[in-house]
Image (cartoon, rainbow, N blue to C red; front, side, top):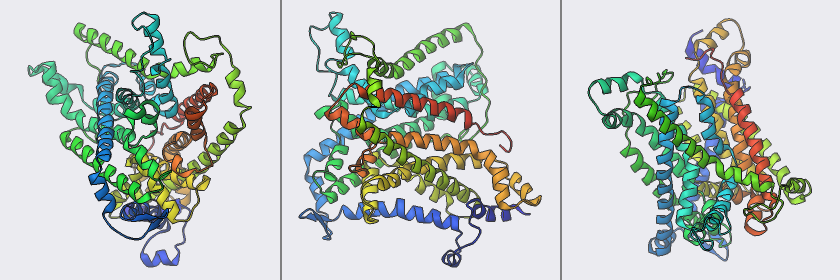
Length: 580
């Protein structure tokens, strides 16, 4: 059977829909393609069009009035406070990503070019904080930087300060520090592969040509890694610029960002058109910044997209050994920076006192015992489990189906569709929350668990989609053709040939989706209403009624996340059979 026949028929069977509804047949679409386009319309296209349309409306007596105008944009243009907030938002995120890059880029070089053994473990060590609750990481920095925190305690006890200082927390600098901390794993992941793909022969050729170490970096290493650095920088920038929770927790008034303004317009102020206009301006501003970053870091092209390059470690000359020693010290310092805040949370979860200060009053597990007695916490945890179950199940099935459809269908615009499906991942969190509010409101879905499931699926599904699609593109296409030529049905081919090869990616996507769902705050805050999930409950506790029980909650969540990572690491390794 020709390969074109295989690629034309596989997606329908893979989705279990051999029969085509009449309306899809008339359009020349298959069920999998039709569902894919329906998702694009309902989850991506319509909500974003509603955001744009709403920005031109007005509110009268608390209700939307269809009276299109540019009034909201004119109000923004004349508002000095808005431009101050926008400049601060972009500046804080940009500077924090620069600081994160200054740490992550050398880390990627060390792991990618210097390390000889235990490389997977070291990579996991740096990436692991991404899987741990964002609230936990932010709250840990509050414990460090607060007036009664660890840093002030140390400075006062050592005699460097007479009394605790208020200069460490609730400042722009504290926001930059915490955002940089959040950015490091994103930039590291993106840049590491670029370092690994540089053949040692290129570096040796540069050295043999008489180039200094700096010249080799400038003319060989930097051109081949700058694009990956720009991509990691852009991803970190998107994460931080849409985060309105972290600045509120560690920045105070000086750290207030435009996300707080958007959230307030869709909350207490109840002025959706103005909030939509602010969101549109934020998107355009973020897009402009990232466009400049990507233009300044063009692709050299020689190695990009090249997979499977075996990196040869450099020879261990005396100079190289000294460099490796200093690199190892820097790596250890970076690891301490990443994990010290998390270790602090664990220590305070065992503190017998309600005060989060040193010296500790004694060790106790009382806060863990109180977890099972806190009805509000248990109710929120059950809601989170229900939401996560439906989000992961739905996103895994749909994401896998869409990956098969995009890979095996003959859509002329499959790349464009792929980018559109991944758009929620490239949308700042606060804007995505607003977009999903408008979309679910248009569908008359009330706030609560259903709306939360839809909102979280909008960014969890693309994760599975991209992981499975990347795996499918590395498979040998003749395996499917051989199975069909041997007499297997399309369903049998999927079950016994394709599924074993992509199962690891599906599992990895599901586990990552579970973590994303269980930890989401920014989108869920807009959608959950009174149906608080566990992260929302924890956030409210930290804002209004903190007890040390929160430390115990964070530790339990962290342990669960680490276990998920270990499971994902073991199960997501694909079989080498069929890989190209």
